[in-house]
Amino acid sequence: MRDAESRHLLESSEIVVADGKPLVWASRIAGNPLPERVAGADLIWSLSAGMADAGRSVYLLGGEPGTATRAADVLRERFPALKIAGQLSPSLGFDTRPEEYAEVCAEVAGAAPDFVFAGFGFPKQERVIARLRPELPQTWFMGCGAAIGFVAGVHSRAPGWMQERGLEWVHRLVSEPRRLMRRYLVDDVPFAVRLLAGSARTRVRGTAGVTR
Image 1 (spheres, rainbow, N blue to C red):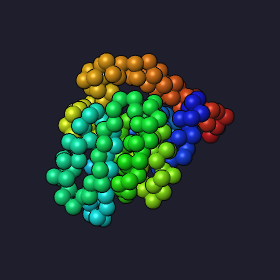
Image 2 (tube, one colour; image 1 turned 120 degrees about the horizontal axis):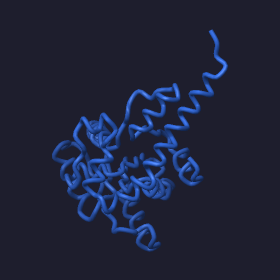
Image 3 (spheres, helix red, strand yellow; image 1 turned 45 degrees about the horizontal axis):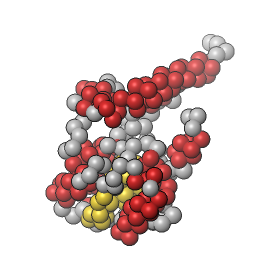
Image 4 (spheres, rainbow, N blue to C red; image 1 turned 180 degrees about the vertical axis):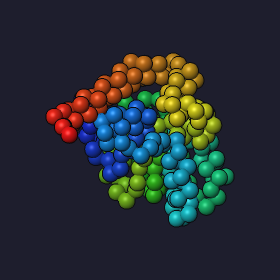
């Protein structure tokens, strides 16, 4: 990863999972296979179930206006024992307006949740988490991308066969072309190609000189 800030944000995380098929493919090509893809859209359900069983609270932060509220209602219905500490879908660009950014962080910190789902996409959600962590040292955070919107029903996930074949991004691009075209076609696809090519070079270097 060439972006120093992005690398720092990932390295500061305690757990990093492969939320993308290209990462799984790259690991296999490099000869150090990851067991499977772990999507934030799945984790938000399993972690909420675990938090409900433990009597803990969650905070939903992100999504388009009203999305977090709808997602909270869905989670309450699915997990009646789950404590919803709060939910907030800040306005677009809130993180570029210092006063509004501070208000959002103060609201989350004041709720004192046990777990925060931050759904703004990488690396924005990681920046928000980095700002909140000092204020909530006992809280766990997860950057969950579009998961809050999936829970709310605002966005639909790709069919299982597309997920298995690494085509979920195509489904999302067709669903939201104006918002995601640059991200997927300009940023993500070239990165995935470089990632796979780099993994292949790593595999070749690792096997060079091996004789029987």
